Image (cartoon, rainbow, N blue to C red; front, top):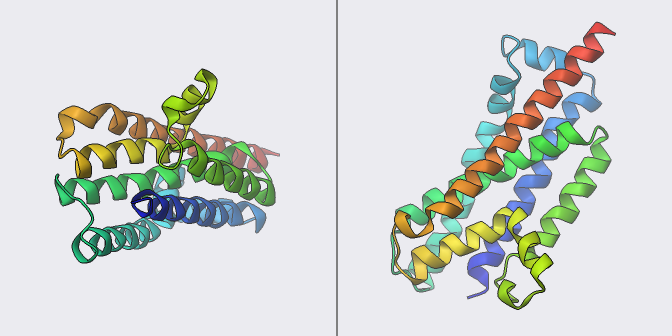
Length: 200
């Protein structure tokens, strides 16, 4: 049963690192201005255009993994598989948003990838599927909530094991949507950096 969170966790790390690389290479190659100009000067359209194909690809991988687990391996599924699939898509988008945020926050490509790798690997420890968060010291319990995998795990438990509806796990969905807002902050930082380079 650890696989039900380990596999999304691995997927999340892959999405995070791959997205950091794809976005930061525009800065590294000095093509950020041309890239954004191709999107009519809109940084957010440029980011969406670059990342959307990978959103589809990684989402399909995550949903396929759940099909194998819940339909072929007959893992417990008391709730809606559609809701779990939508959760996978949201999780992928969240990881991409965090990637944009880290690229905007950390200028060097190798450093942003290193920070992303550390953050992604810590999420396995802090998500609570291998060691209960409630048994951690209070500081670590609070620290666990800055990792999207923690909220994915809690929502998965509510959907698959308890058969709950949105009324039970909505708070975790709201927190995941908050992570998406960090992507908007990252996009704004990239836009600001691009304009500063252009003016100089």
